[in-house]
Each structure stands twice: as structure tokens, then as C-alpha cells.
Image (cartoon, rainbow over all chains, first blue to last red):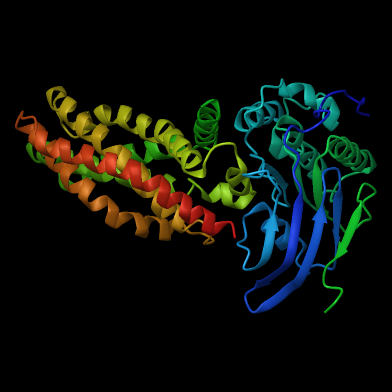
Length: 210
Length: 220
């Protein structure tokens, strides 16, 4: 069980962001996924996205991340320009040939984080896994490792696509802990999920209207 | 800047551990070893053809690795993360290309002198040949990257990558092999070397921008 660590996230983000979605719509091919999405998040607020498979949760997250072009409606982040965003999707971006410790060290360097990345192993519940190859990790352990960048490079906007998938109770507790610290520091968070998210202050169910 | 080197180093480490370096170098040697069997054992003929043959096998060996340039990142989600890194995507791309150059092209260039021996090249011919390859090879990686980025969202896009890169390679091939042939006559072909450098420098400016645009399109 991970001992709670202090200071894995800043006490307050120096650049808190707002998130305002106005009249947002998205279609993939000829299919309209959602339309008329309007939502405002202030620092410290979290939005939970619910909805059936294929209702557009991932597409909405990818629009906010800037991967998908916004054709109808607007997304704005208040003053934070360019928005500093973390996106964790189904594809975790981990490299199978690397060891866990190497992955953390590279993550720290790639995200410009000065921290001693190896210290994160206990927090992530991966103690003594530093020498293991990423390809040998279980799905849940990979998820935990992918979360490392949230702590390594503090960013005020987190976009998590079904973060609870494949995680055990302790892993889900880890997400809750990270999300709690993030929100307490004035971050904002948008997460899609099929299970209720305790830390959410707002909810949005996609595909309910149509 | 440390972010740039981290991306570069990670790409090089992954290319090495994934066995791409070994594969490319082995490919070069297999190609060169087979040549005398196909062309006959006439030493004068082999030497006359050697510069062109070495350029062809160098490019073929490099082509085997091109589809790994961005394909793995696209499949495992790293491409999404590259968009969000604290460095403009153009520089992220440049860092990866540099990593690719270090992990693949430099070992290939180191293997060229040995491969040249198999084709009866004299050591005196090597400096000019290597100089031409050094001047032209950055363009091979940079231009190949354009092909790789355009084909990245295509499943099994390796063939498409090769087909897209090939037209870009023809000028490099013409001037590179031309300059290398002059080496046999013991001359330094400054004009062709300058043109090779020009192609490499122009690709250095244009390719990262083009590749970044293609990758942004691929993550949609």
C-alpha cells in the first residue's frame, strides 16, 4: 500500500486555468456525436463525463486537448495561453522495451521536470518494480505508470479518459488522491468514466438527449 | 533544450533495443556481400560500380527503418503526448529525427568502409565517399520522415512510406553517387558536395514543419 507522500503536487498552481465550453458540437464522419455542450469549470472544479460507448466522451476530451479541431462552438481556457494540459488516454504512450525506472527518468526529462522521478514509485504503488520491463507490467500497473507525468510536470488542466479502467481498489484510490490534490491546488479536471467519480463537482452525460 | 536531448536519446535507445540498428547494418552487409555473386568476381568492375552500389544499399537499409520513425508512437499513444510536450512539435520531430540519425545512419556510415572493402574499394577512395554520404544522409532521414509522417495513420503503412520517400531520394542519390564516383578518379567534387549539403540544409528547414503538420493531422 502506498504511503501518502507530501508534495507530489504543488500546493497551488501558479497558472490556474478556467475552462469554458460553449455550444460545442462534434461529428465523426456523417454521425453527429454531440451538440450544444456548454459547461464552465472554475479552478478546483472537476467534470465527470458519462455516457454509453461511442457517445463521444473521448472525442470531447480530444477536442479540449486540441487534437481534434473544433468546428462548431468554442473552447476557451481563460487567460492561460497556451493551456498547459495533460491528457491520459486509452493508449498510454509507454514504451515496452524500457524499464520502469528508465520510463520515469525519461518522463521527467521529456516533461522538463527537475524532480527525482524514481521517488514516485511508492506513490504509484510500483515499489520494487523499477527494474521490470514495461512490457511485463499488467494493464493496471501500466495505467499507474502512465499517471507519473501528472506528478512530474504540474499542469493545471488534466484530461483523463476512463482513468479507472483496469485499476484495482488501491489504484482507484490513487486516482482519487491525485485528483483531490490537483483540485485542492486549483487545477481543473475533466474525466470520462463508466463508474461514478467521487471527486467530480459537475457531471455531463453525453448521448442522453438524442 | 534538455527536453530536446531527452527525446533524441529516447528515440535512439528504442531504435537500438528494438533491433533496428542491427537489422539495418545487417541489411547493408547482406546486400554488399551478394553483389559479387550477382556481378561476377571481376575486381575492376566491382570497384567501378562500388560507389553507386554502396549508395543503393545505404538507402535500402535506411528504408527498412523508416516506418518505425513515427508508427510506433502513433500506435502506443506517444504521438498524443508529443503534441503536449513543453517544446514545439517541430522541434520534437527534429529531436526524433536526430535520434534516428544517431542510432541508424551513423552505424551504417561506420559500416561503409568495411562494406567498401568487400567491393574492392581502396582506402584512398573512402574519405570522399564518406564525405558525400555525410553531406547527403541528413536529407535522407529528413525527407524519409515526410514519407513516414504522411503514412503514419495507415495500418501497415511501411510500403506507402517507402513509395512516398523514393521520389525525394532520387536527387540525393544522383548527386551522392556522382560525387562518390569522382572519388575513384581521385578528385574532390566540390560542386556535387555543395549541392548535397544544400539539399540537406533545405530539408532541415522544410521537413520538420511538413512532418509536424502531417502528424497534427494524424492525431485527429
